[in-house]
Image 1 (cartoon, protein in one colour):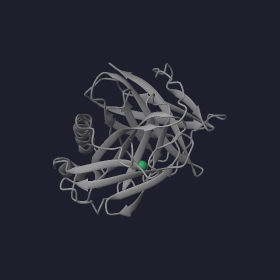
Image 2 (tube, protein in one colour):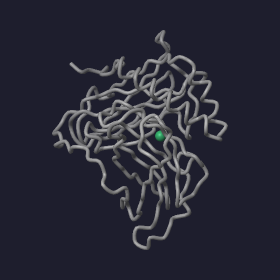
Image 3 (tube, protein in one colour):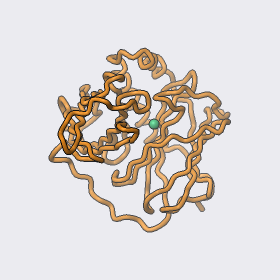
Length: 276
Ligand SMILES: [Cu+2]
């Protein structure tokens, strides 16, 4: 039955997400010295007038097979949106997570015109995934629209999310430590990632810009309902510290993915924290 159109807006969830996103972005942007970001303050005050429909070009998604995700963006009258602002070097950022948040993918679909974005990808196993599209229609507001989709095929057994006892991780030859000034809800928090060589413990001072900044951070609540907006404090930093700001909207468990670029490679480091 799931033919081409699998996506209709998740009304309440999408609204919730949009609201909390906007609130967070407001406070973040207020303190952001970047001119591009301060513009968002006015943009956020406008109403969200977009409609996003997700579908699979092949009709369905199957685990471990090439699947083309299509994202159709329209205004409320059903007219395709033709122009998008470039934010962090892209017109649209797509985050794909598995239900247990173990799988994370941050990809950039290609704009095909007439409101349509497309990207070919593979899902590692069957089950439920959530797709988050992040974009700014020209003249409109910063928008995040999400949708749960189902992927056919053998599903991996879900791994319960666990709060990290240590916020130091080793990923691809790097040691990344995360420190957060506090874990209280509703209060702006500073996340500081410190990146060292895993072997020598020498601080890495030549991080490359990733999507126009020192790094990119995505944060979700453990149920994948809330998508937090996070912004670098010093976009041009090159390490070993990479600092970001966000506000955790409520108490609970959050998964944080930091992405950094070094030696031409992007590394993704996950952390799980509890806000209480
Ligand atoms: Cu992106």
